[in-house]
Image 1 (cartoon, rainbow, N blue to C red):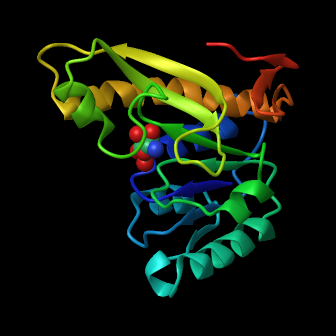
Image 2: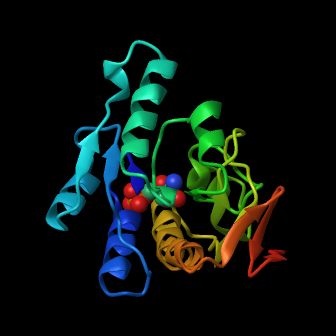
Length: 202
Ligand code: GRF
């Protein structure tokens, strides 16, 4: 099951790779906190149930989280995939899906957690940037790292140009991590992401 807030281009790649068998699984549902998310059109087009749980309809963060958790649970997903989901999840939900929830973040974590990563990378004139897939833990943009994809930062890069190249890398590494999980090869053991039982070292 995939959680989104926006355009859903990562979602699209996941849907496509499930459809053509590259990922041995299927997307059972999509949840968006944004009613206008373009990703909902993608799920509808693929015949996948899409649900809106608008955080603005809930008085407290906890109310939103309870509603979201109920909806996720109703699909009985093996894996919860955060793909551009722009709300911070609370501890209850994160603990419930420990080892079964992945996120992709547009930086080489632990560098640049949080928002506006491409803008910050360009402003800092760093040489290398990229994206990180990690297991989700209560701490934001942290959690055991599964895989990273790297891109060179050019002196002439704008944040938009850099974002586009990072997205291309995301379309490689996120399906790869999900494929590993679906094959039963990727696990969270203690605080360590493991592939075939061996801790992943970057
Ligand atoms: C991606 O850059 C991802 O790393 C971040 O949000 C963006 C989602 O893009 N978490 P899209 O909605 O998949 O196009």
